[in-house]
Length: 207
Image 1: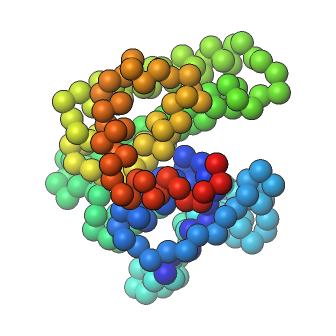
Image 2: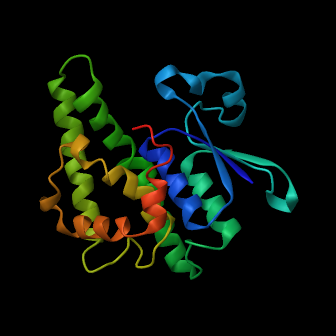
Image 3: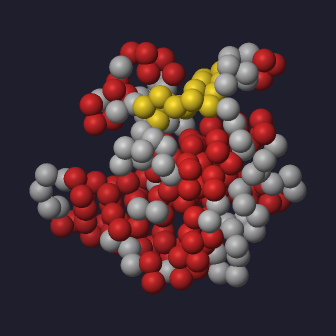
């Protein structure tokens, strides 16, 4: 059994999509980041960086208990454990790693800043709005070019798609017009037909 500690954010939903996709047995524990529950001592034991999501797997390597934080590490772990959604061909595997790292290093953090300054900052900060909205558009353009004539980011459905999709799904928060990125739009529609994505995006159903 896997315990998923999460909240309704793009990062949290990367992992719930993956858990659904591999058919894992798991239970969900909400960590309300609006109430600073990520700073509680019991959670910090699991996630030292006090960020969601985190998992605890009672049936880890060699049957031992393991806890993991950071979505990239969790997705790779679940992919390797299940033997699913990580390409077996070595070049494709590294290609998938590239795009997973691209999401973790850019498409997540910079879009997260756009979310903050577009929706949550107590006052308008023109410099920040210009910087992060422009970078959001650049990153979307990178993804749109990558998805030209491709069904998925590395041609076959992988953890890279699961990592990118929840962030793309909040395009309105990034002031992105979907029609400007037709390849991403088509990919998003394709992703949303997957039952794992439909279910994973509703866990937990709090926002």
